[in-house]
Image (cartoon, rainbow, N blue to C red; front, side):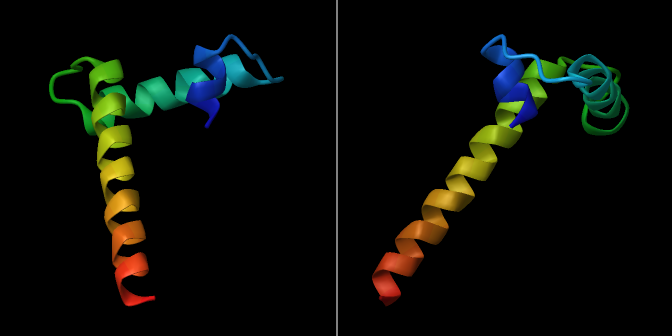
Length: 63
């Protein structure tokens, strides 16, 4: 959610420090050889949306 707010130019207090921490985490943990952080975050967002849609479909099927 914080990244979405930053993309929309909304800057809550402390956002720059939080954003820097997220970027460093992504660079060190989620990417290989300090790859493209934005690409990794987009992939994670897409995976999360896919899981949410599958869960929603499954819930509708069992209801």
